[in-house]
Amino acid sequence: MNRPFGVAVLAILSVVSGLGFLLRGLLVVGIGGGIAAVVGMENPGGGSVLTILVISLAILVVMVAFFDFWFAWGAWHLKPWAWSWGVFTQISNVVVSLIAVMGWGTFRTQRFHLLLAIGMLLYLMLPGVKRAFGKS
Image (cartoon, rainbow, N blue to C red; front, side, top):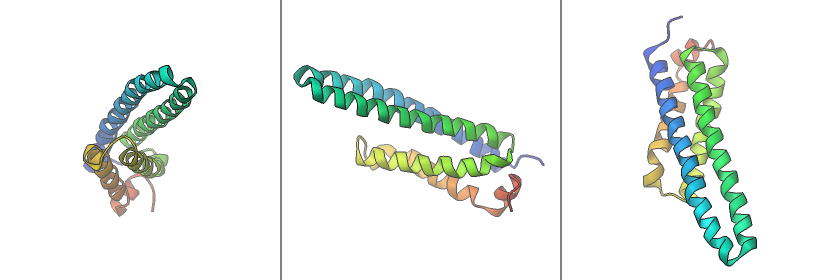
């Protein structure tokens, strides 16, 4: 089956989203690591806890980036598993974006990823898109 144009766009947008999450992960490590170092100077115990939280959050964000990249590859090649993985990935993107809104960001800073993930999730639910991935 030929790849529908919308699925190609979905794969490309997933790469863009993955790059955004990868950048976020690097920013979390850089900024959060700096804050943890400053806190650690005044309170070594607090700095250690903050460092663990920053690293955990950075790992989560980078994992979501790799989820996006893996989905993009599967969608580009119309792999049957890619539809399920895409749904999982977009839900993960929404969750991480909402965590960011509650933590270090605002809706204004997170709206692109949040709206992109919701739009991609809705697009994946269309019957023609499901058929393209071999789902009924």
